[in-house]
Every structure is written in structure tokens, then in C-alpha cells.
Amino acid sequence: MEKKKNLSRVPRVITDKHNEVLLNKLWEHSGNVGVDLVLFLANKQRENLFSECWFSIMDFCEAMGYERTNLQRRLSQEELEDLKAQYIVADGAQPIIHRIETVFESTIYRLGKENIGMPIYDLQTKSTRYNFIQIVTSFDIHGDFTSKKDSKRLYRVKLNRNLLETLFTSYNLIEMKDYKRLPDRKGYRVFYLHLARMIIIIRYRKYQGAMPYYSMTVSELVNLLQIDIEEPKYAKRKVKSVLEDIRKHLGITQFDYEFVKGEGQRFAYTVQFHFSDETLEYFNEKGIRVLSEKFHQTIVQSYVRRYHAGRPWAQVFENLKSDEVEKEQFREWLYDNAMDMEEKTRIYRECFMEVFQQDPQELGIDDFNFAIDICMKGDEYTL
Image (tube, rainbow, N blue to C red; front, top):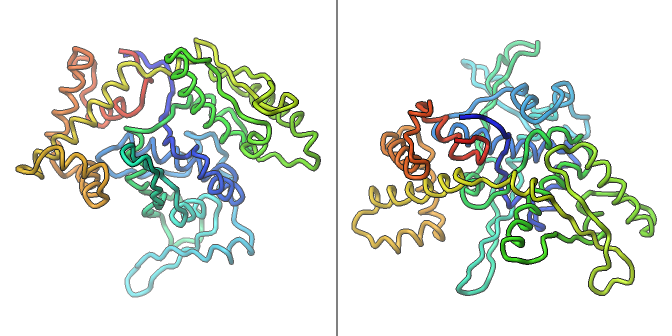
């Protein structure tokens, strides 16, 4: 098995238009750290699907391309007053109060206070319902709080399971090497997440025989890139300048663009984005995606047989898609490494053999967490 890519799955909901206000709010607090923590945690949980996940600030920095000193910067007095967050550790009769006061810890805390909108489309009624879910449901800090000296701290942060589930069903792919090359400037990394969305849509348009491009107006790009302009007449020039600067930082995810006249426009104030066939193919998951979807479908069937025997399969399956109580019960079972691990392992191996006609152990995949890593990661490996 030869490792050749560094593709990561990103919950598609992050780039939905109705969540732009949330992304801007997170940016105002700590730049792109909030969004990057969501991406980091999603992939960290993916690698440890059935086990607890502790990490250090250096783990985050190395994975996402940050300097530790920037993340350990203490907040201003005004920011601390606005946050008012403490972490209390019981130590005998005298509890120790640790103030949440750094950029890194305060961003984790804010992710627990913010909700993200997740649309649910009902094809039968042709309507949309929005569920608003908490991004981070809990977090722990492990460290020596009795000392005034800085000591290594470990963090355990749980993303909402609804958000994690989208890594099976509704996600985009990013090339982490390119993503890390982009500086933490306003709009840069958020725009890259939209590039990933464009690639999915263009590949689909090409498959359907439609024109393979993606269009955005200059004004939409000004909002997405969070460009500050005093005169609207300079918007097009500024958008072009930022797009060119982003292109300089990218390697694999190169894109081309041109200004064209959109519908009802007198001048060329619409941008059409294009990707080469080579780039589109690079983000094709091939067999790994088939494996991931098959594993997810089969694990649901196993759960229904074990815990809902006697009930009509179709009814339970529909409830798992629409009933929040049943969905949460399934997620608790899926992510609990103390429940039915032999069954979960067996299902993975059988799905793997069906897709690739080989036992994963023959390829050296005898560690289950590594196996799940491949199942969840996308086309990072060739078989």
C-alpha cells in the first residue's frame, strides 16, 4: 500500500451559505483557528472512531500549520471580560480554578457555545428544515494546574455526532498540503473550502454533460473573501488581486478563472472557475469511497438487527434518518468502543474484502483503528 495523497474530509455544511455569519464571527475572535479546529477534530475523531482522543497544542500546530506562540497568546482584558470562562479541577478540599485565557483554549470554549445550522431536505414535501446543533459538546483539559509554570496540557474535545456523521454522507475533500500552505489571512482558507465544494459540483456537471465551470459574482466573492473596500468600483480589481495571491500558495489545487458577463450584467462582474482534468481526477476517491459508504450502510443494518429485532426494517431505517432520539442512540452505539467491537471489526473486514477482493490483513492492515482511518480518510492510499 503506497501513500500518495493527504486528502481530508470536510463536513460540507461548513461551506453552506447560511453559516457564513458563524465563520465571520469565529474569524473576528481568533482568525481561522475556529474553523481549523473543527477540521482537525473531525479528522482526529475519524482516526479514532471507537476510542477517546487526546491531543496537545503541538499536535494541532503540526497538523494545521500554526505557530504555538500565536495560539498561546493571552487574551486582552476586554476579551477576558467578554468570555468569563473557567476550568475547575477538584484537588482535595480545595478546588483549583484555571482561567480560560489563551487564544487556543478560548476558541475551543467558543465552539461549545456556538451552533451550526444543518439543513435537512425533504424530497416528499419539497421543504427544508434546519437543525441547529452545538459544534463542540464537551472538552477536558489535562495538565498540572498546581504549578504557575507552563506545563504540557492535553485536550479531549468531542464534536457533535451529527457533524461527525457527515464525514460518511455529506463532505468535501481538501488536500491538506495545499490547505496548510495558505496563510491565516482573512478569507483565504475559507475560500479554499469553497474550492473543494466547486470541485465536487464541477465533476458532477461534467458527468452530466453540462459546462464544467462554477460561477460566483464579484459581490459574492467580496463577502466570501471578507474584502474591505471603500469604493465598489474597485471590488473587481481587489478580488482579482486576492485570487492571484491565493493561487501563488497552491500546488495541487490549482484553478483557473475568468471574468464574464453574468445574466443581467452590463459588464463582466461574474467569475467562472475552472479546473484541469488532472485536478478533478486527483480528488476522485474511487474505491475508498465505495468502501466507506458500504461500511456505513452495513453497520446501520447490523445495529437495526441487534437492537430493533421484530420491528419492520423500513420503519426503523426511516426513523434513523428523521427521528433525533433514534439517531442519537445509534451514534452512541457506533462511537462506543466497549460495545460490539468484534461485530464492527467483522463488518469492516467483510466490506473491505468485497470492495478490494483482498483481506485487509494481507495488506498489513491488522490494526482496527488504522483500518477505520483508511475507511474514513478518502483516497489517500492506493491499493
